Image (tube, rainbow, N blue to C red):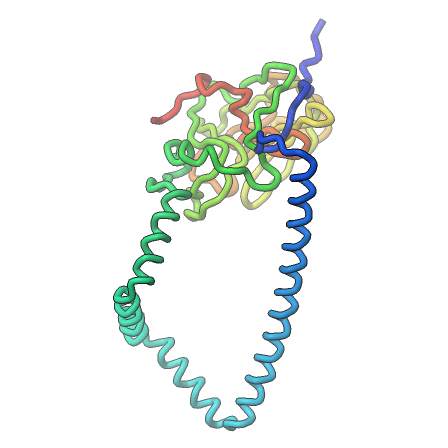
Length: 290
């Protein structure tokens, strides 16, 4: 008789990325500070709105004072300099030259470069090949909706893709599509188009769909709190509402959506929070380029 292979959360799980214990007084102090910051931000927002309104009034007054013809002449002068890239380039170079002569500016420029290298690795990822870069980013705090915290599950997770190559970790990285710095909410497993994508646990297909970024995707619910997500698929092998077994095929590997080649984007979600799939899938299952 088949046993039900649906996982549940083990005890003492915490999705917080912070492991420091703080007493209630510290918590109240933080809440107080947070409320003060919110009030300050609201005040600044109101002031900025008033300043913008006054600037608009001043601009309208200036146009009326100098006359329509003079205003048109100024607009034409702006368009001339804006379209003349040579003039703009010379002005830009002169400003940079002047700025470099000021000691304070040189120090700020140097400090900016040092700070930038703390958060962004020197290596540029190619097609999601950003393993080395992501190793340096592991200690950063995850954004809202994701967590680096180790969450224990009651059952061993199945492999979603056999004999795959791990090309991108869970965590911060530069996007292989546009080079922007952001958070990768799953892992990428490279395999040829048409390879079988397998359900990692027993469950029910909650949703199949398509999006600009993920392409074709499947969301499987395994329990009230646990879901898995499979993206960039070339074809579906299931429909919404289907019951699936651990190791059963649910889709085919593809390169739909924002993708640089055929691979599976795989996520694990606990209470709608994305966690690192490699807590449950040992790296030894995959080929990793070092």
